[in-house]
Image 1 (cartoon, rainbow, N blue to C red):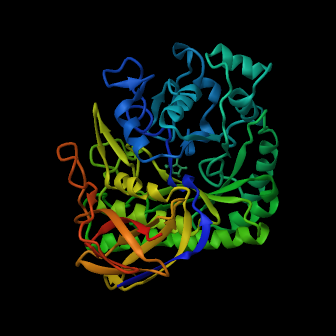
Image 2 (image 1 turned 180 degrees about the vertical axis):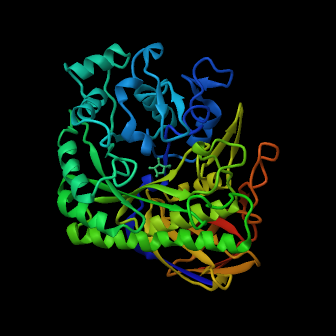
Length: 493
Ligand code: AHR
């Protein structure tokens, strides 16, 4: 098996925001997962759990999307500011019909981002909101001076404005965000986004609602009508192995056939991103508008005994492969993909962290983000893998999916997803025209359904890669079945 990396062929810059995340008022993501309140026995800073914060800092989480999702188009931001006892309680109709007490609102979210050290990505309400409401939210967060919203912010304890770069104008407006046609949404986008103002030095990167999966018509129409008014266009694609939404498949109990089918479906991301990018190229050949895959990841049946509206699922080595494959695909499209946000951060869908009371576990997907963080802000390199096909008769997939980048110090970062379940494979990596000085590596591997539990939190952890052979400009690594690998190669000066 062979991989050729060309350090002389530098391609696009990998925006660190490809390693972004998403947190919605859904199930136990915000409440319990991130925010436990100031009075909790769980160690917290201003209500935000310290154990989760530490884990998020470790992976250099760059950007966090909030408050939804479908919740965004039902969210009225003024309900979530001011003294907590006065905040309006509402029913979270999308997600489990539970009471949302709005104790986590704009101030709490901005504090969370500040503590993580990441950029906020706020998603505004088009579906059930008004232009005025959206406009005032931006004024509330970013205006520095004398204005009704800046005054209100100050009364609520925040004198200085925040910096808010990323702002989404609606979410899934073809579905839960209003069931709109693309023509209608595109016009609404033009109207709403006009009043998303830049105040002072705060320059908003305006994001239009993009398509679902294979809906290329949506991208075409929205780009044609509203392209010049946006900085980014979103895209959602979930990996769902089952045939329908009633039968998505179990997160932990699955056959080899299900495993290969899941990866085959996740590999469709390549086609989806390529085709949407090609449509965008038609209207925006300079690639000014970013494609933001702001929801992606696995979506399985909820864990038995949990609220079906909470979307709580376990996370196995299969999810680690899904994460690694998608991140490699996004890296390879770094010329157009400027952000991606896996759904969702804690306790929901393909979460990197699961919590139970005061305990947390890091999922296999977490370890992939940890290893891949080294690609952030690097330059993509040309690379080519000479693959075999593996899998079952009906579900054949490539055995390796890779990407490579170079950092400012000239080190080459290579990430490999080895999809085969059955055998070790020796990978020969050739670095064109560069002698290798040294190399370090790390990996996760295991049986496809291996996962961490609160009883056994370290079933899947990162390991150091040993026995990497170096010869001139070649490396040799042994890839275990079902593994995700990261190599850092230092070339000779
Ligand atoms: O991530 C869960 C939901 O999936 C989001 O709220 C919505 O945007 C999408 O359909």
